[in-house]
Image 1 (spheres, rainbow over the protein chains, first blue to last red):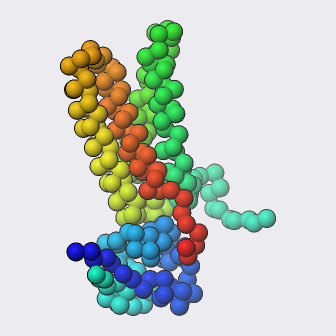
Image 2 (spheres, chains in turn blue, cyan):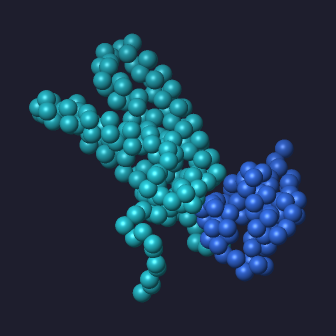
Image 3 (cartoon, rainbow over the protein chains, first blue to last red):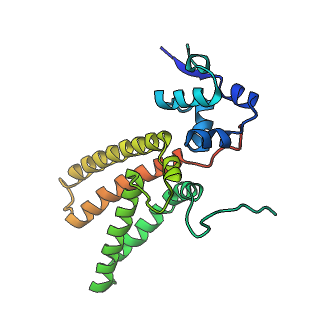
Length: 68
Length: 152
């Protein structure tokens, strides 16, 4: 089983004209955290996923999904 | 030339703490080797050895502080939250696992070695603590290595 958490973070962030640093500031995390989540290196907690979805004005299910 | 306003120019920021986290682990092996030569070297007097031992304890405790992610009261609450975000906690947890693994492996090696070579207690403690610290800090430094540029 080789599942990974895919996301539309970059797509939505650029759509809103936000940089990684600006999104990081909004969620009170470091830019590296946003960068690693976007690149699928770091899997965020439910708490951070909910925060990211709320700041980006989308649902968690739209933002993240499991990819085989 | 750019100018960036900071309300407390004399205090470290979350950014500077993160930069230190990237740089510091790579210097630790050098400090450890230098201190070991003072603590166990034959050409040093008693007071120098005591000074070296106290310095070694201080450096080890400072590294432990960094690995445990203890609060940095001089940072604002907002900056503390950024410095201790969930990725940082995950990195510390991963580094601690590597440190414990190194401790056990070095301990096993020493237990085998003592069957053939007499082991000095001070040397054994120094080797165990430093081995665990150096391995976990190298892992910590690697996981905190330079950030890719924006949007990379």
